[in-house]
Image 1 (cartoon, rainbow, N blue to C red):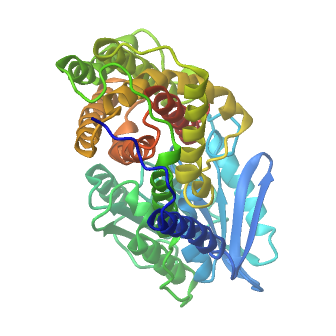
Image 2: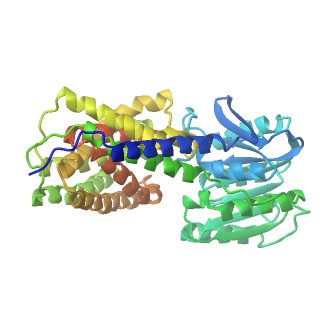
Image 3: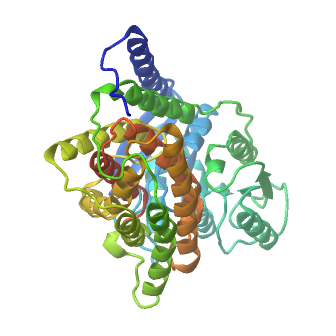
Length: 491
């Protein structure tokens, strides 16, 4: 027999609520202080969203344009922005077309990236804090190719280039000027590519005076995403720019934004659990037990969905489906995967208005817990109008999957919920990796699939306080759809 939760506000529960709220407040306090000793501006120029950072009351500073990679944003590159600006550089971060808050569609064939860099260059060199004769570039992944190309085609503008997790460019022994290549030890393909680029650029050299200095640095213990948060990567970039500009600027600032973000997430999830007695709980058929049919649906769904997506891609170009790269094809995968799991394993009851209300509450809490502070730390969380139009379609695509997950965990013990989380994590990630290998344009999923178990864990923890399958399904589908809409580029 399952006992009803205690609804009394005991002193222990009150203390729990207060500590959780304190963690949330502390995280916001910590993030808002990050730019306290910097000059900071957020603005748009020619439809390109920009962030400018520089030491306060400084003049004639060398400047650095920081460019993100595919599915990235200016927020994701703030680690380099903060460390460089604290080291005495003026920094301009931008959102490329189709990314972040930039509503211009991504042009995969044209020169949109170079045009966006030109806008950032003009904005940076017009700042009163900046010496326009001393400008450098730093880019990650897709952005690395863009900054190397800019350094090759406009050598009169840029005196140094740092390419993190580099892609490709027609490098020579002198162009771009003073080239540093970085890659993480856990991203072997990018390490190999960096070494090939170094060879094409004439090999290692420390001739900064002529602009032909070249080097490769392997950053231990990181891969394609975590290298962006690596203090070692940030320090190497500062050292390289110091040498290129003949400076001895200080190194040692450590970017704490992701620690504050983690505290924010933990604080919110803890608060949701502390308020659990106030949330709804229903009892639906099949509660409290797992069956072979339920596990069979989860086992088949991810891989059948990957296979059907691979077959469909042979006849249909899915790259820009729903107007969003990767995310549109991912929506098809979610519909098939979730539909199979739900159809084989469960018989959903019709939702009632209260289910929908509590689902909206769960979405709001997830939105605040995982997204609100992300806007200021690593992700453009606030959707632009074009992305808002796509969001309901992505949420609808995720609904069968999330509803099945809600039924799987309904009335479950901690260990039963943990088992379903582990099963989802392994099988869903496996299905996504299969799609990444066999569906054109889906390869980027390889880089982000390892993060998915963390998202599922957060949804599961929050959803355990809303022990209602429809509330869980609707709330987490709305949240997951929002996440996809925020992450992938518009086309």
